[in-house]
Image 1 (cartoon, rainbow, N blue to C red):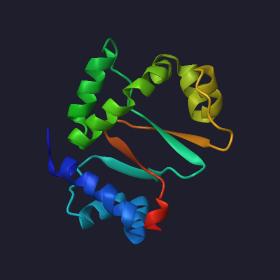
Image 2: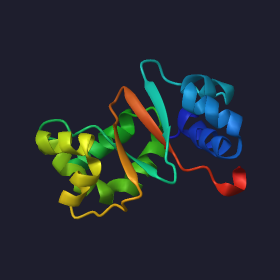
Image 3: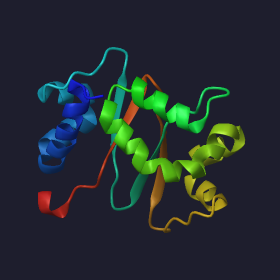
Amino acid sequence: MSSPVSNGIGQVIERAARDAEYRALLLGDPAAALRVCGVPLPEGIALKVVENTADTVYLSLPPPPKPGESWDAALARMACETPFGDTVQLALSLIILHLVRFARAWSDPAFRERLAQAPENAMAELDAQVASSIRLEVVENTVAGVHVVLPPVSQRHT
């Protein structure tokens, strides 16, 4: 399921890793940064870019399954509906084991609120320990709103 967007988003992330000025543009105006690389942003999609740092890690949650929908069906649907095609499908495959822990956020509104407000505490409820030096931030994706989480800036690229 390759598209101009899925083909280009990897190039965008790679350029942001080696070009500080472009990274700043991507963080400040993602649509403009995609245009610079010739990557189209589908109409109706809001793109927000955040970056992990040495002390902050973003947890990017996909939208919950539709009522009665299985996890597998929801993940397949999201991979098909997303504007980032294979790139997001790969990302979803890589984080599926972590999503098992977050299923509770989809079915338990109180837990979802705790995860959004105090992610470190919510992770502890799931027996997932987070180093005290790390701050967790939770971002939620929707079909119309996608977050891209950039890895920390590599020392060799600074």
